[in-house]
Length: 175
Length: 122
Image (cartoon, rainbow over all chains, first blue to last red; front, top):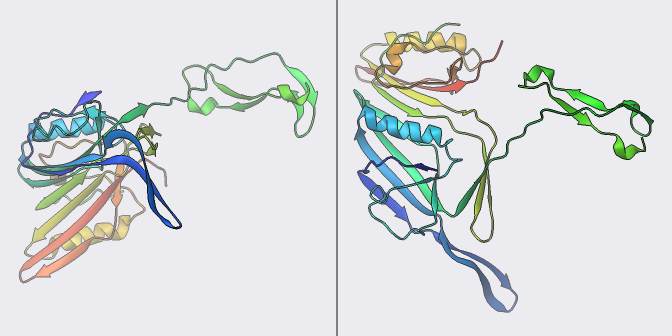
């Protein structure tokens, strides 16, 4: 998990977040509320930087890029958020939106960055279809396929590191 | 393919690319993020060109008339000068929308918004 650059913003807007409460109404009684956890989520910080120099803007650009934009999670030094300590210690931060830079002069930049504290998990799914192991061929004849198993969806044009195939197995069709 | 005219903008703003992401929240407040691709899309650049004449306006509109939102093109170094911006190799720009022009007495301002797109054959 990366760390947000230690750049002190010129101004900060702060949203306190919300507890995990759901609510529904029923006839004749008031709203019924459920609190799911004691965890306060969604504290949002809007960090406004003015007249950043080239080195500083490169730090922000690089962090946003290496963090895969709004996908990744990161920690933020408390100095960056003005020492606000109302965020749960186990919270992580994510970019709320993609920041936009304004280029105001020779290598001088204004940028507003919006980040959100949340109890989060970064899941990474990697689909790898290789190497597929071909079993022995088996003749079969059943609805809807007719021919010689296995049927292979060839992925040759994808240039995999190892020759790859997707195999549609007809094992349950009585072969 | 004609490059964008070699002009120097008076103002510039830049939005880096974003990644396709799916977010799922649970009642307990956990949030799971799934990133679907390694490729960022929607890089955007906005320029304002200010001039005392309509020469720049003519160059930009002539370029737009040919490229439109269909033909991708490259940018000359003059429009990105000293910005330190880099982009994925092979990607090119298209017009995000029609350029607009504002006339004040003796001042012509042309606003242009560009979008970076992945390579494709026409």
